Length: 292
Ligand code: MLT
Image 1 (cartoon, rainbow, N blue to C red):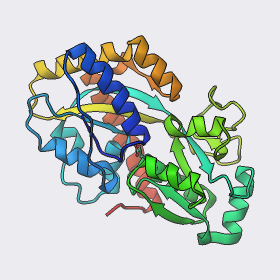
Image 2: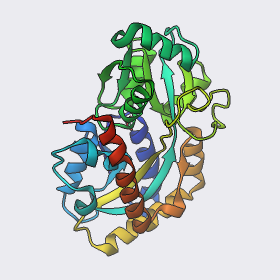
Image 3: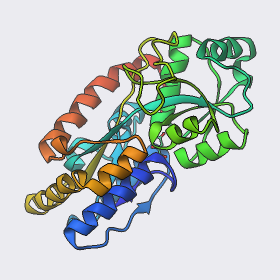
C-alpha cells in the first residue's frame, strides 16, 4: 500500500490502521511504503506504473483530485490511469500554531499577518497537500500572503510546529486533535461546517470570521487501471469489512477520523473523485496557484 506522504503524518496513520485490518481480513500482510514528494503525485505515479495484479495499491486523499488543477504537466490522469477500490474515510482540519506564537484568536492571527506580512511562516506538506490547499484558501480569504515553508508530509510539519520553528499550519485532525486537546499547540479554527466533538472549544473558520474555508479530507484506495475487476472486488470487500471492524473503528475514533464503509465501493470512489475534481478545479484556478 503506497502512501504518497512521509511517515508519521495523517495519510500514513490512516493507511497503517486500514492496512492492518484489511490484511487480517485477507489473510495477508499489507506492507505500507511511503513514497513522498511532489504533493503526492510521485507515489501516485508509482502505483499507476505498477503491475496490475492487486499487490500494489494507493491510499491517497483529496490531493489526487486537486492535482488535476494544480499540476499542468501531471504525468498521469487519476480518472483513466487508476482503478478506484473505495472511499476509506473523512477527516477535518484545524488551523494551529506553534506553542510560542503570540496570537490567541484567528482575528489576532490575521492582524499579525497584516502587520508582519511575509515574516509570518506557514508550514505545509508541499504544493498539492491538503495543508497547502487550506493555506491557499486562507490567504485568498484574508487577501494577504505569508511565507510558505514546505515539508515532505504532515508528520514533519507537526514536528516543526512543536519545535517552535514555524508559526502556523492547517493540519488534519488525525494528527492535530490530540495536540490541541493536550494544549501542545495553539488552535484557532476548524475547517468543518460545525464544531467538532473532539475539540468543542475551537470555533469553525466561519465563526472565527473566515468564510468559505470548509475542507473535508477524504481518503480513497486505488489500484493500477488494468487490475482485473474481480481482484478489485476482493479488495473493496476487504476494505468494507475492515471499515466495520470494531478495532479499526476504535483506532479511527482515537485519531478523530470517520470511516466511510457505505462508500467503500469502486462506484462511490469514482463518483467522489470526479465530483471533487469538478469542485476544486475552478476554485484552484481562481487563486492563480499552480504547483509546477
Ligand atoms: C500527510 O499525510 O502528510 C498529509 O496528508 C499531508 C497533507 O496533505 O497535508
